[in-house]
Image (cartoon, rainbow, N blue to C red; front, side):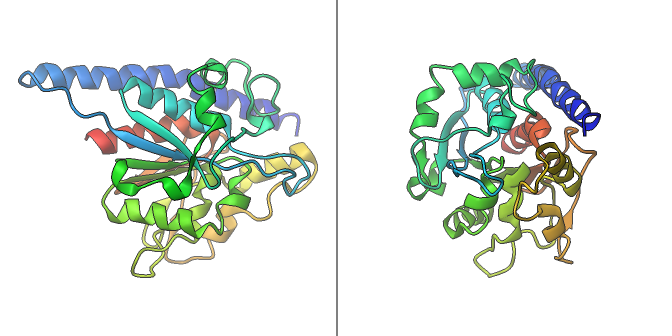
Length: 280
């Protein structure tokens, strides 16, 4: 286990470092588009709603759980650089907390050099958003261009059978809007159904926290942390295609308007696909 944890942390650090390069690349693309065309009227900012888990205390493994810090912090920062407007929602509304394991300031899986997440965590502008998240029932699909469902340890409890969340996500997808998940947030794709009754994931390629990564977490805590595994359940459905990259390496896929990222190392990669879908 000790040999695997540093490896996982290195991959997360590489993802955080790559985030800056990603932002430069996206900014360069925007400048090229602007210089190539006629003088343009300032576009209406894209609107994104993040959905994060409320705290579960205690979680199945006996300690408090919530959302994964980097999975919210990194996309939030990238979208902010693009001038997007953003809201943060949760099933119950109100205060949300990140998983202690994801904290760069002492968390078991939180890389100490992840300055973006540290800045996000301490930002006086962000703190009120995390103390008073919008209640999921108050989120209207018509008010946004994209939905982004964040992972962490909490979603396996708070999202798995959350029909309201499933229906909201399906409404975005059926309206042709960008519909994104990351890590354990992808658990909703096991049960989200379209208005026809068909599983949204049928015929689709998607990703989420894989079994190999669950093994690393379980070994780190010497217990089973999650009640079940997304990859194992996804592979029971012959009509969908669950894909993955190496453990804790940045990996995200797009299948039409459906975008998904594998884990916390993939926040920037997933956000980049969302940006491409919104602006392409």
